[in-house]
Image (cartoon, rainbow, N blue to C red):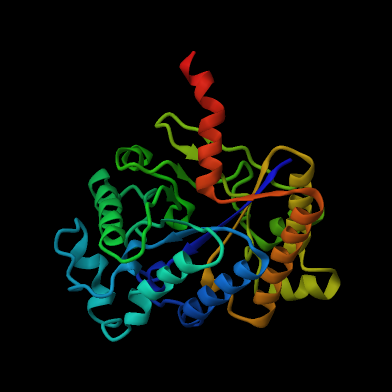
Length: 309
């Protein structure tokens, strides 16, 4: 029997703070989307890995972050345009809601301020500062969060050695087929592609790579509307096939999304349909539903004897 994993990039404004023109609709939907996600996960009893931007653990800050290696430019919007938008910069209430949920979620790390670890300009010093700041923010909060899982901003993997140095145990890698680069490729995957099951592996740093299978909102806008006029939502088609494949095989079907993906009623309906399908398959066939943390622990347990020989 395979496993379904759901991971969530919980970032609010930090996912867009470095853009010249942050998408207003996404910024304003983040908090409501977060609450809706938690409610639906509780309804269907589905645990998830919530990769939280570390700054969101804070209740306040000086906006200077003087000890951060790239403080001068990187936190400019926080000091200026978003000075009066604490709702985009802080979220201890939302992090607390994850911990207090009926389901046992995994609270992971999405770096401290959404720095791209795979960018050539991101040095080990910067990566280390991001991870340490996240751990310190979580450690000083009222929410117990022994973060061990990491989701890289922009899914751009980098500085895995630094992750291992600071006690993280797993990360969301890129699946064998990568992310769809166009609406056409996404539609092709939905109609003729193989369901993207993945296999977690232990890398050279002892970290478990739990690759992504699909972004639940990888197809949106006009392309999605056109497809839905012709046949069912193509993302739902491939997700159902992936879940079905997981009930028959030993792989992992790893779906990811962001709270700010839930901008419309149709977006919420897509998520609810997927969660209901996972819950039904779990009830009927015993489908395994786990967090990245769970999969990491299981993977290490299975590989440890082989590593000793």
